[in-house]
Length: 203
Image (cartoon, one colour):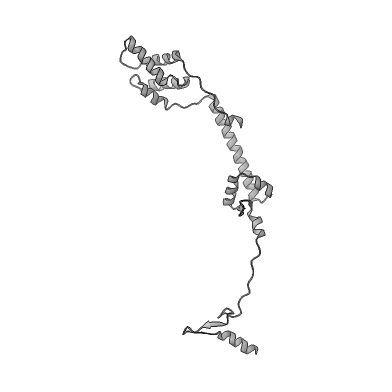
């Protein structure tokens, strides 16, 4: 876990002699001849443009330039090539491996938590201890219910807490639904004839 969060150590940078060797290797590519003064100025220009890059980046530059350039690359071309370089040393590979292990562990813990919620095997203390993001996802999966105060409970427990629905008796009169008043065809309110008949029978 610590390796996954530690900053990467800086890479070794090339000194003036290392840069000079790199530039000498690039002289196999055609370029305009320099006099002594121009040659020194050219070396200084490349020091300012690319002298602070790590050794591995400069080695990448030489290999790419020899492979792809028809002429000795300018400083801007060197910077463009260096933009394609990617760090790939042992420290970076170790951190990536650690990050992958952390992600796998977190995924395994998440899967186990969702499995327990789906099986209704988690108690309230376990639910309260889950990360908020996991609770929201469990809600979307239908395992948890979010209460008005922001807490989460098992959806099945929430269902058991709800009051039983009130069962209403079916109305005895299918015409007026026990209201005992109906509208005639003329739109006039009148006594329900079915209810009147029932009363007459009862009398």
